[in-house]
Amino acid sequence: MSSAIVLFAHGARDPEWAQPFAKIRAQIQARLPDTPVVLAFLELMPPTLTDTISRLDEQGARHITLIPMFLARGGHLKQDLPILIAHIQARHPGLTLHLSPAIGEVETILLQLSDWICDEHRAHQ
Amino acid sequence: MSSAIVLFAHGARDPEWAQPFAKIRAQIQARLPDTPVVLAFLELMPPTLTDTISRLDEQGARHITLIPMFLARGGHLKQDLPILIAHIQARHPGLTLHLSPAIGEVETILLQLSDWICDEHRAHQ
Picture 1 (tube, each protein chain N blue to C red):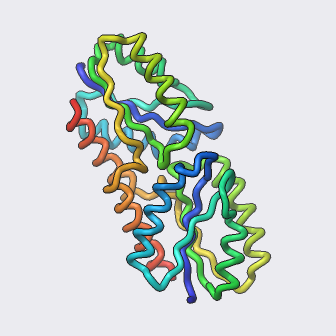
Picture 2: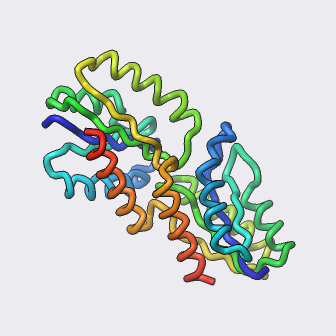
Picture 3: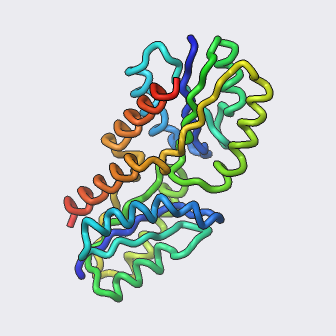
């Protein structure tokens, strides 16, 4: 193993909350069977980002793509995540980390959401 | 006006947080120029869902498509939103409300997110 994907989501008290992220994880894993694809959470549900990346490092990952599964950028992505990343990079100097845009910053995804909302509205008028 | 679209998001202290939702709103508005497309928030930023729907009702909306802009279903969608909707329906009996699935419950959207994540990973390995 040399690369891995971490889907980083907020977390919630309700375990069912994680279902969409688990589905996305499984879809990506099916397409990239040799790449570990794992979930990590900011709070309220395990595992933490720090623990997840430590485990991937132990397993031999050298490059990690980190995907913030957030629709919008607020304090969690502007303050909390940079602190977590600085801490992780200090502990794992041999590891390269690509922090992707949050999903709500990706124009393609916004357009796909708009498409779906227009269809949903037309179908239920 | 007879129908309208409400994009219902969580809200945050940081005003910039709303940007992706404002972009989606504008994209939909451009495609449906005769349909009011408005944002409403659960907490931390105005306007509330209740105020938004009261205003649309005053303006003559008879049918509203309500889109929960949430990736996952937790307490906000399972407890808070049904209470809000019951309150709104009691106050606006002449109005029909279509509550769409949350965006993280829509298979097409999950697949589009998985596609983008695979591309993002491949592009940065």
